[in-house]
Image 1 (cartoon, rainbow, N blue to C red):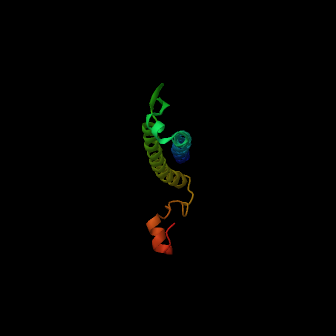
Image 2: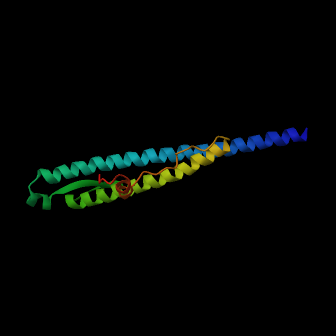
Length: 141
């Protein structure tokens, strides 16, 4: 009889672990979605900024200013400075998304292991870089 309770207790412990890891996977996926939305908004703002820089003549673009929201306040800054800030944010968000996606792969592998499923094949592959692609095909893209 005690053996029955031990196995039931271990099943409950396993299910609790699976639930914790699954919640972590879902939270990480949501974090990727949120970061991607921010990156998309930054890309849109960068595109509008570039349009305004090219729309005006070169001399006027030097003194042109744009409104930007920093935290919870709006500031009017030179458009070139705003463009630089948006470029930096775009790169940082891209790196952060890549980092979070990298951790997501490990969390999914852990979840599948806890659930007794085989590891996903090809899930841990990384895309080829331009140098590797050139070495493989002999063509620059």
